[in-house]
Image (cartoon, rainbow, N blue to C red):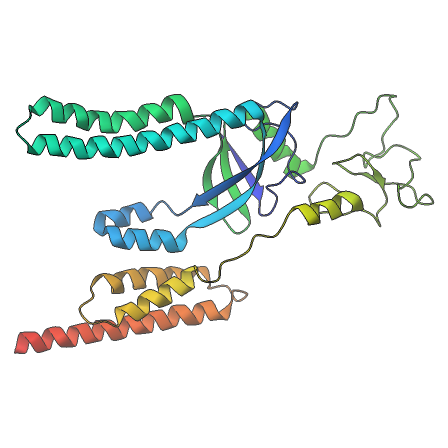
Amino acid sequence: MHHIDIPSGAMNEFDLPPICIVTGEREGVVFKTVHFSWYPRWIGFLALLNLLIAIIVAAAMTKRVKGTLPFTEEAWSRWKRGQIIMGVSVVAGIALLILAFSLLASDAPEWQGLVALASSVALPVLAWVFFLRARGPQVRRIDPDNISLAIPNGPAAYAITGHFLAGLPSPVLDDGERLDANDAPDRAVCARHDDIVANQVCTRCGVFMCPRCERRVRRESPPMCPGCWELRGRTITAQAKDPGVTLANSGLFVGVISVIPMCYVAPVVSLVLNTVSLVRNRHPDSPRIHRKKAFAGLALTGIGLLLSLGMWLYSGGG
């Protein structure tokens, strides 16, 4: 697998080169909608301490991204088929695991339970190896500025990385006309201003444009003409943010629960969530309301711990 970083908001057909991320082919490429979710892997260690804590923290810290990636129809079908087979194998593995414990606890021969137990592990592993591994992208990390993916094809990773670092390759003209330093033909004029010499070529449709017409998503991004820019704005809708499921809100909610005396799990979860929220929002430009919610959650947690301690001393003294 090969690592690529895609800037936030650039996982779409306007900002990515049309090359299949699975096969590296450039013919017959279509952009398909994909959904990715990611949470820090250290949360898995919390499951060793308390499964409920791990579930709550994972739910609060999970980040989700939706966009489109280039595939060929065949590569897309193989990847989706592998995901379905993997899901079915996981369900079958859980059923075999329950069956294994039932057989081991019954009067059935021990070998039957052991076979069922081994099959519950082997089935998902074999499904992943033969039907899902190297069939599609895998999310590695989701940050506010980038989404990191692992994709199967090396040339595709190289093309996408080069696209974001240095723009698309210069267009090749059939008549051999010479290009200037900005990849625009000598003496070419802007498509919208015929009295101005063009200094750029739209990397999506090939239209010549002048500095007044040039549009970019970021300063280092390849230029787009006004027509492609308007089409991009109509096609790509900004992802709606859910204000109800945020780390700050989750920490405050668990902090309120922590006030309940003798509720031992909630204070631990609240301390983790609100501390992480404070660390994430420590920058001066972060929303102040998030820091206030984190402090309020920690304060409520402290009150709950004092109440629990008081009740414990009271019951012990009695």
